[in-house]
Image (cartoon, rainbow, N blue to C red):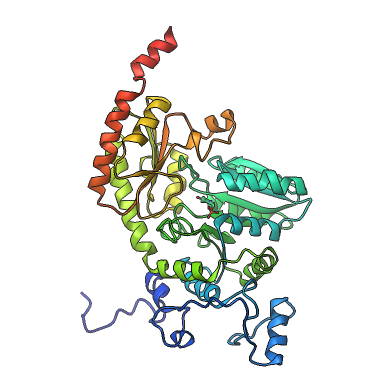
Length: 436
Ligand SMILES: *Cc1c(COP(=O)(O)O)cnc(C)c1O
């Protein structure tokens, strides 16, 4: 027993955990006229404290000089950076273990585009895992490939193929890993991708799209990835009321390069959105822990329902390789699951029509439960073959679980599944039709 009078000695007093750090680090109330929480500064331009300070600010912004450790550098113009972006970037760093710097963007896609344009020039290549978020796929095919940047797809769940692609790709600059993948939660081995990179004469950067499980349940930088990428539109902001993107890294110089591209593209997150996202950071771990617990209870209960052919959820994986990856890199299973219904598209549509609490919408990560039909919405632009490979059948519905009382969501999903079982073709009927 530890005496209650003695403070615990196992941790140095200045080292606090992420939920504490996010409330105590990176914000100086005296710079917001004493306000306990950050104020909003909507200025597009900033008044310099002196011509010398302006000259110094430009030298630093243009990369001609590095700021001294405690130097306060004047802000210039909001497309380059602004007070609320700086506050948010300082406050989000402690949420991502091992991060030392962050850059914020006006959407997840803005973050991913800026990443690719910063580190990949014409003639270079990107290895990326599949299935991949649709927007990222469009970026590679419609913008990067016409510019001469080659995209090399690898099935994320195939660890050996991922390592081979990283070893063999020509002029490889970036490995982009999205895990777990949308919508069947297939996982890619972050550590294996990281391990393959240094064998190359010019090691590529490894970036992880951590939108689904981070920053609470999966820590790419601790697994030695270079960059963690987020659509902050999802769990980070958590209320389905804003768009945002964040990239965090261990090396501040990489983040400085991203900020340089951001200033050219003009896709920095705007002051109001920075302020809003900043206010959501202290509840990220509260929300996502509750959402993951809710999802696990529901997924494990409905997996045996007669309408359910297959349930995709990390705690229900049966493939040994997927279980190995999950146990190596995920702390909790998260709040997304997908249900493959026996009755195909009619059953999936009936399921969505019958939901009373959950709403039929794309996107994810909000405090409210959402459900959608990937084959006709988020993944409708994939070819039939790509959909089949990714497990996106006509009967698949994807659910993003919120923070409601889990028993209410369970009851809602249960009654919708009962209706789906009636609506769809029954397995015995399908077998009979196929046999005929
Ligand atoms: C939503 C999402 C994105 C894109 O983010 P936006 O904020 O919509 O631009 C990228 N990756 C994943 C995994 C996503 O879910």
